[in-house]
Image 1: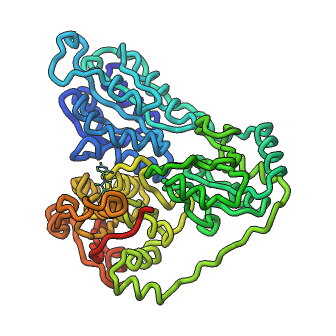
Image 2: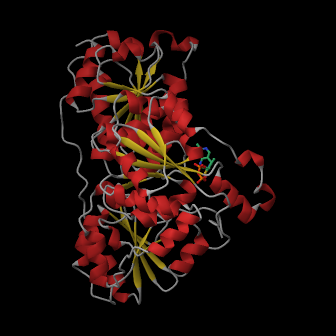
Length: 511
Ligand SMILES: Cc1ncc(C[n+]2csc(CCOP(=O)(O)OP(=O)(O)O)c2C)c(N)n1
């Protein structure tokens, strides 16, 4: 079968259509038979949309990029997919192999460029590689710990015989439970005075089985969410007692009473630097698919399923205290008067309770996490610290059939704002709450804590006509003041933007 047909048939048979992409001359030969294509108006957006589609339903997804410039433009997104543990297949066209030695326009070493951000990078050496390279790429992406993979597809191979296309096959499983390793953890728990659990994003990737909750109940210990969790650490919002903050000094303080820390699918992400060691004198155990060697005992396997098994091995150490969440109307009224984001987020959490939320709220992320809470498959943010991910990811999610809510800062909205075109064109049911503080609020907060002379700089402020931007893409927008505005946002068909004017002033977010 000729190369371009083999590629499209293989993609179809492997369930990899539609693809999100931004095309160029080097991709046109490969795309001739593909109609199931979501056009994105910047290469990087295609990767974000593909990741959003994956996050919606866990199915493998493909982004198609335009050789060196497209791949270069997308590096931050590919690195975010790596940090997030998202198994995307990234493809890019490559120059005609018959003249690469002459270094023609657009030619570059693509696998070399992308190497440090993917699990597998391969440039096809022969047209017959197409089906097997795709299957290998998919297998590598979906072998825990998940992550993106890359294929470079030379344009001249598309017009050569490529043999039979790839057929469907079974992806590797992710249910490993290391019983011996967990027996060792159980013994450590037995010998500990006061253990605690830190739960993280991996549990949402590999499935919530109620393991974290069962383990916490069996031991009788608290559950902390890892710092800056990118996905829901637990199955239900009541499981997490509090979020850890991403600084060694703060983590040490929060975990002070505990002599044993059990990381379940979690990592201790740090920022900013604080001049102190992390958890000195404590024993730290890691259970999950991404061991780093930083902890004394590591048990490889499905973290939540492992926690469930571990819960059957341990003896109770204490009593688990379940906090009751109550709605504080007085606090809500104060936040409303001060124009704090917590007010509108409390309303949005109620009105949009059935939608997954994508968090690029930046300086309001802590309050978003506490108002929305974590529920399995319902909370997503970029683990890499990259801005511009939220809008493509939320749009991709909606395009894959899960209407989504994005909460985003006015600064962040601008990084990939042309995603609005894709959202409109393909009718994505994505609702956007923009928290408008006319500035890079978190940078002002950071500066006021550590570099006071920079806190008032003009280059941290701007005014944007967000309604004008929405209108230019044919997308309705509204100001958000009261509950009925949020309800109207939720009821408007297709993509829609609500703008909340935050009060001026610098928030205290850092030590
Ligand atoms: C791609 C990228 N560029 C720049 C930054 C640096 N940065 C981090 S937070 C931030 C400001 C975000 O502003 P906004 O979205 O308005 O949220 P706010 O801080 O005001 O809540 C910037 C510019 C980044 N993280 N990623």
